[in-house]
Length: 357
Image 1 (cartoon, helix red, strand yellow):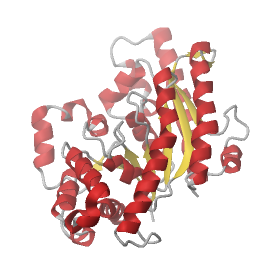
Image 2 (cartoon, rainbow, N blue to C red):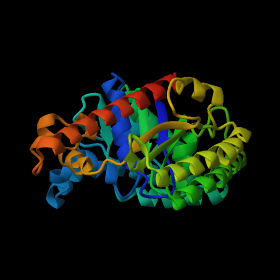
Image 3 (cartoon, rainbow, N blue to C red):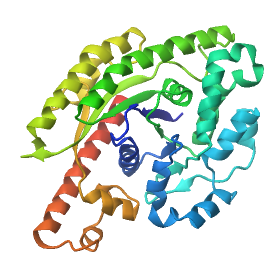
């Protein structure tokens, strides 16, 4: 059975989407078959994978109109219309979208994901009196799991929107694991501080929902016990290969908030990986629990990677050199930076595999 991982932080601009793509690609490079799922109605992950050319209006219309392509649209339609997961699996809904990595597939997003978010929020609040909607929260992970099984997926990685709505609640609490991408600033510190409140509230709400509707908690698709693996600290400017002082300040504050507030709250509801196991995979590095990786700002390389619809670390020397006027020292610097990102994401992927084995 595939393992599911959510990347979640309800603050925007922390590179959730980019990290989803990069981590998925890195796991795929290690011969894991990976499905990345765009559960954000803004569809940024979909645009990143399909590339600039595909983002042209006429190309996108053709893509979504084709019955050859499986997207979140038929998934949402099935859930809202009451189609059972078994019936959905038996029907022909098209194929997952290929990427530049043979082991990495995409389930593209769709604007109507926002409708599902509203439906789930209603279901969780009043569904005990509305049989037509009470099954929506549980059927979502069932359908997504069936898609994964049909395609022999090892890892499913969900890219979530920066909200605390019903869809994110179900996606995260139904997952096996979750990772919190962060950026070193005051507003991210605030967001991380409030995660303990939101996740513990979701846990209480789902426990009550399962009980009120007479579901068996042991077999219900939303297991309500995702394991927090750690945070990915990113989007900082390095100085001598380490975060500059102004960024390190916030990295330290956010780490302290995670260890002193978030982790203790998650321990009470059995939603965190044991600290000893985190420390074991970090042995020999300068990282501390629960830091899974420190990823500096991508700078100008991000534009090149978007143009080629691949992670920065997968860019070739030629792709770097032929994009704009890049030559001499600048080219060498960018290639060295690419190689550094390759090392960072390889190590992150190995840690994820170890922690989820």
